[in-house]
Length: 102
Image (cartoon, rainbow, N blue to C red; front, side):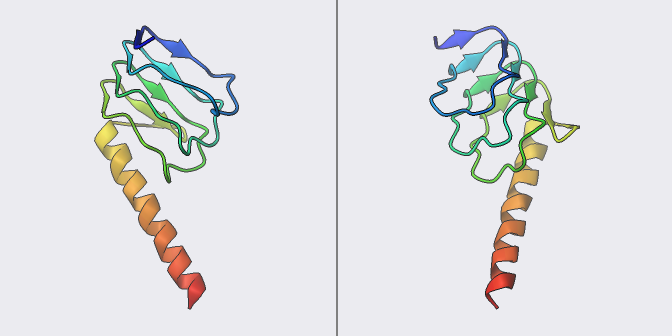
């Protein structure tokens, strides 16, 4: 479906083959995932997004709009703050690769 209410996928351990709807009117719980690389998140989530157990945001395409809070690594973020954190993780990764090549 293109639109649903809330979605609790807390028990999901791998996202391969998962097709999420474009719009979720409530929350989305993906706390069971430790890796979301390549997962296509919905364009819009009107509730909270739970991704507490992801080990990194590198190569994760975040939703364009989240009205609620994003729960990541035990903290709450607004979408723009999480995107800043994601950008910092990318910078840290690049810096560590450069350092190891010297």
